[in-house]
Length: 335
Image (cartoon, rainbow, N blue to C red; front, top):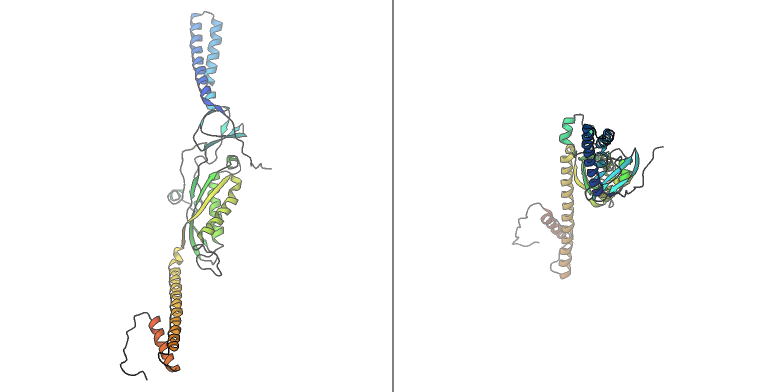
């Protein structure tokens, strides 16, 4: 059964400066032993001792580079995951100059590898892929960065809850919190985060409509903060096994797909016109009711039902018309 790493072992390392000085002194001593042994063999004054010194000096000079492999330099917010003959022995953290077992090796599967996205596999041409995909090119390094990093994948085309095709893109703020999980539980934690973010985005976007909802239902456009929080929780659940912490997820792009954008724009304009007309009619009816009530209350003029209907009709035409009304002054009697 495959082992799942959950605990991170913090390695306590010694200061590397004393070992650096000692290694340099011993390397110089090895070279001096070779010279001294050669001189003794040349003069044949104790030849055996000279041969022994020469052999020892030569052997040590050949292996004097081994202690230098145990010297490690770490900058702030960097870590090294170390293994000894394939076994995980700990993670070296903290800034400074350290000395560890020279036979250990640092492991970082994501070193020098791009941040793969779901759209990368859909492009069969690798030359075009470099121009269209989001790949972070970096110098190969066995060190793992503990800094807060940003993932900005390509836009995804998905269907919302109503089946309308939309384009949506997100940015994810994340960091590594467990180096053992990040290195040993997944092949490439950066690519793993990228793919899981795309998958979570598609799953969450399908749950909500773009902008039209009933009974206060959340929408992608109107409830972007709530949707972003759910998206962050979903991504965090998926990448927990990789020892990553998702600090924030934000929607950076949201639009209808180009093939239906024009039709949806017309629908939005029609909905806006209908809503505006509804407000105008409601306001006009209220104003007419208020005018009739005032006239009746103050006993300004007595109108029968026919003239009330004519007055209401004229007021509604004036208040609800698209163009300004041209008043006609009646100089005679209204009866």
